[in-house]
Length: 402
Image (cartoon, rainbow, N blue to C red; front, side, top):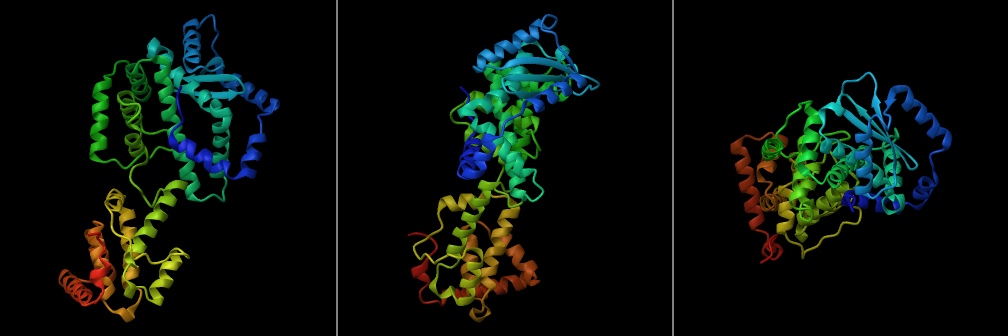
């Protein structure tokens, strides 16, 4: 049996904690008049495929239903007046209405059509898992994201939810077809329109793209096709151990410009940890610096026992460029907050920036903000480090654990 992605489960648990919201959406059902209107709209814009005429397609649908262990009643349609290759599903109770677009029936082999139907029916499976809780989550997340009052973080959360659902359904295609080549070739044909494709060559091409730059998916509802194929390839090779690798493919590095609900908390925790290190020396934690820190976190306290860890270095090192720049500005705020301390805090912050691997970014920001030339920057840094070395307790407040 397929399992939802950790992101799906995490989001489901997040919304279940909001009991009133969860209860309201749990009680909402598709009314019969809504279902009737949807069926009518389908009939107006499609050609319903007759089971006798298209027996092979319905046989494939039945095979996918059995493989996914669902109870869907499948009806197939061909969309009218479009040449675009696509497929979609509408779920009304136990009815699964699958609409095919373009010349898919001609283009796909039997195994590839089975994979396609398996993908669409995996949407049905997803909605029935865990007593339908993921279908409820689906409605909650999109209702919030589509509200004009919603923040960017809610829109990004819904986007990622959709991307992971498509990857889940690609696994459903694999479960139905039992042939990774068929699933991959189906995906490639759908996006190229080619009758003959080389899946191994395309996977290699996808690897080259990710090796050059892995910034995560920019897809609005579906991951880019090369990411889908690569994620499926990784999962096929190592179902148990590929999750972290696939997560990096989809989400990319921690980017302050694209935060979902959970990465927002991750960035908050990272900011907190960096600030605590920034104010580790007792002498730096003046009234002005304390006020600055508490503007970020009202309950922030000094922790003299904290150190720069390898985990933190890796977290900062793998973050996106804008996130690293943001951390540098946080550090610069601490360094420049209290003019009464002159340049000594800057020495401590320069040391911390170096330990975090932020020196190039921090130096560039320091030059830009203070309008310094290269020589002036060096002189400032030298003075700051000299001042730091004169602090009596600096040895007792090392940023690195002995």
